[in-house]
Length: 156
Image (cartoon, rainbow, N blue to C red; front, side, top):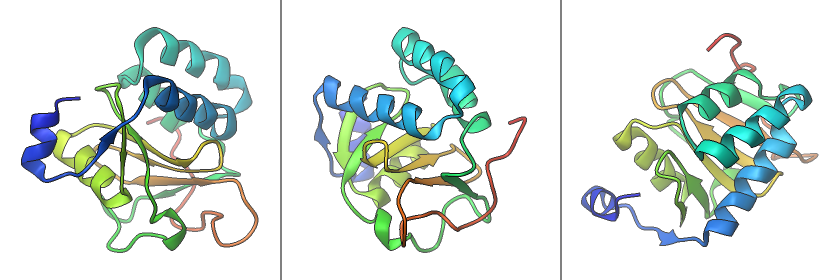
């Protein structure tokens, strides 16, 4: 990921170890992707990293039990409180960066890229589409369970 572009955007972040970023992506796939698509998603991640094919597959095959699309606008006017923490941001640049939810959203929009923002590996994450919304993913009882918007779109 080009740090100078993020510097120009004023996005504060800390580089993560590649293994940490990879663990967040692997946990996201294992927890939030439909069982029959996990092997393909894992193969795409290992072969190509975070790229358009993986991103497209993820948006089509998210498990609606754990993921909810908020497509009311490109980005929400307010963020769910349970997601307002530091997390690992991964986009097509492939590097994992530790940053805030707001900065992850800004980076995704400014760079026009789909991106994963993983807060707790395999338990709490946001998947940013480069233009039409945010998918909130949570596996937990109580206030972190996504309730915003509709279920993930099929055929996108």
